[in-house]
Length: 153
Length: 153
DNA sequence: TGCAATTGGTTTCATTTGTAACTATAACGA
DNA sequence: TCGTTATAGTTACAAATGAAACCAATTGCA
Image (cartoon, rainbow over the protein chains, first blue to last red):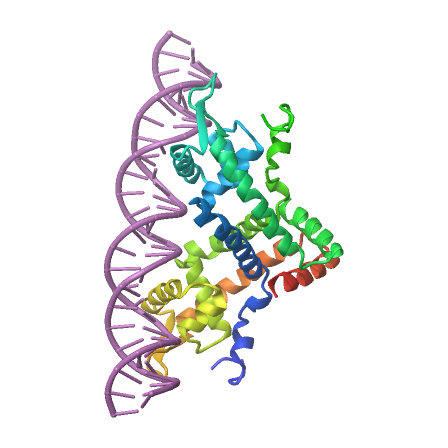
């Protein structure tokens, strides 16, 4: 056998990750928990998938984007955006036109029905965010903002 | 028309979410970016999916768990765990035995081959975590830890 | 011009994932 | 001890997702 002593515990031999203190793992749990809570609010109410809601949220904020620009803003891939848009347009929630000077590009905006859904969902999403942030005091909230800015830069 | 003035801009009428400052959105981007970077390290090298790696990581730390306990620890659902385990056992990376006093439960541990993979991947995962944390100074790291503790409590 | 390379977007097909139903064992209460 | 209910885990089927091929419009440049 090796120089290592026989009775060395597995943890010393192998140094397993301590998931409960491992940043990527903890971020993943936190992110999924929050996103799921928001999704639960709107999925059944409006028959809306997470990707569809993301597309709607970015079109609410930036009217007239192309599909590619939506993909950039949502950090989704273009196939996912294309499919979400197909459903949203079919449901009459998004209006799609063709760009004047480039017929490949679409020009996207929420329809009246799309805005109505947005105006119902957005306050719920904000309320969930507030619930989460309520667990922190003012100082912690400031630090969190600063830390996220740095990590996402 | 309503009492609202005709020329009120959409942003005032509808108050769209500002995704770039919306906590759930930012957490999701950050979490996915980090997890993907780690996954890129091991997926091709070991033909290992994210769910399989999570199962291995928790078995490295807590030997002899049942599938249900793995699911609890990883925050994955039991079907995902069952499938990951099927592949891991088939690949000889996890040993599955039957519990002495309850024949429904399995008793799971990493095989020698499983440990070898673990011992290759775990340091890479830790290195990625260090890369991320290197963007923060000592004070920010302490706050982050404290904030995550509170949000996950 | 005109033709190759690029870009916006969709479709196709294979893989992954989620939900529900199912099997086997165990626990509990009449 | 029998019948009901609960639990561990798997299977089957549907829906979601990703990668690559694809079409159409545009750009760049010989």
